[in-house]
Amino acid sequence: MSEVEEENPNKADSESEDECEVLEESPCGRWQKRREEVRQRDVPGIDNAFLAMDTEEGVEVVWNEVQFSANRNLKDQQDKIRQVFNSLIRLDHPNIVKFHQYWTDTKDGRPRVIFITEYMSSGSLKQFLKNIKKNNKTFQLKAWKRWCTQILSALSYLHSCNIIHGNLTCDTIFIQHNGLIKIGSVAPDAMHIVKTYRKDIKNMHYVAPEYAEPSRCTTAIDIYSFGMCALEIAALGFQGNGGEGGSHHVTTEAIKNTLVSLENPLQRDFIQKCIQEDPSKRPEARTLLFHAILFEVHSLQLLSAHTFVNSRSILPETDETSFKKIEPNTVIAEIVHPDGREPEQWKYCKCPALEREKFLEDVRNGIYPLTAFTMLPAPPKPRAKTPEVAPSEKGGEDLEPMDVEMRMVTQSTCQIKKMEDPPRYQITLQLKMDDKMNRQLTADISEEDSAALLAEELVHYGFINIKDRETIAQLIEDNIKTNMIINGSLSSEIVASA
Image (cartoon, rainbow, N blue to C red; front, side):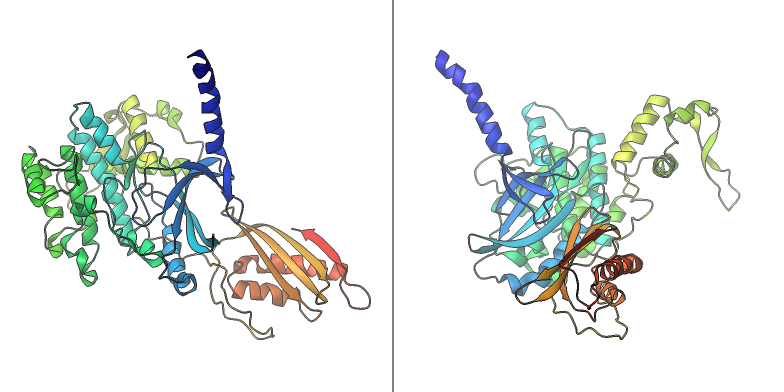
């Protein structure tokens, strides 16, 4: 027995080292795939999900892999892949799992799509609900309200961007240790472009009745799925054959019995509105945020907190210590009614110190979103991707941009080499963008090429922002002028940076 006990620590260390082993790297070198698999995924179509490291930010992320189906062609689907995945990258909301980057490659002769998403270490809502039920605890209405508000905030944002999630279940909603809720950003439509897959029967109760007819599918299908999630959270599962064993199939009778079992009439009304069979009768996410069961936080208090949090991001010197200088009866927010009614005021003394600091922290983390009051703006126009088109013939005429690069260049280097076979000169630009992504551009050049024209073409094809045109042109010009030999040929190798 003693020998076995001595071997166990070594075996554990060995397994730990194996899990931390780097198996692959992203093309840019930023993300490193590890051996350890992530099992909290339930997104149809994803073949493998591994833990990975973001070497720039120093945080763990998820490396997702999707193999192309045999009946799908990578080249035929590339435009659709770019369109769908670029829209996911642009999403920016505190209650949506961040989608960092994606790329395509070929492994073992099969094309695949790899995408990097935020890692939610605390697990899914489904796991959390099972733990509560296992410990024979009840779920508080206050927590249910907070969770529903955050999920609806995320859905309202997605729908304002004309995006249908299409896969909202308690398995694709994640919770952090501080109570922050996030929904997964990868929808089935994105996976359908890559491969054909069979849906998991255990989650069919989340699917709206009209889902079988694509022409009828609108954002209302997400509201139906949300309603089922809200019901499952409130009751900690479904009564009857509600999925604790067997096929996990949830029947219509089980759903009705679970809904009737809820004691709060407002809660029942709220869920019933979401799961109506007629999609036209289901409220929008933004409307549901104003339902009586959810709308309870004083709007003036919440607006004040958001204003304070936003001010801190602009003026870092603004912090909690400044509250000590405020008189208790100081009015920190006020609503003036145009009809002459007495103004509604929010005074400093209404919020005790500890309660105030906790509330501000929750607002800062996204637990009390402001979507019910002010719609979040839609994401900006997508940044340009390197276009797979042959360069047009160089000429002196003005070029109208094919696409616009929204990012700015923070660092740039230029390298010119003399190539032997065939004899030519090659210029390489390495650009570091303001989102910390790197871009490398290589092209053959001739003596007739001017720095201004080359920089103009970089703007035209969406490689650099127009505001960087002069800087990049000067970098190229300095290299060409400095390294031109008297007889008109370029030197063998020049390296410069800006």
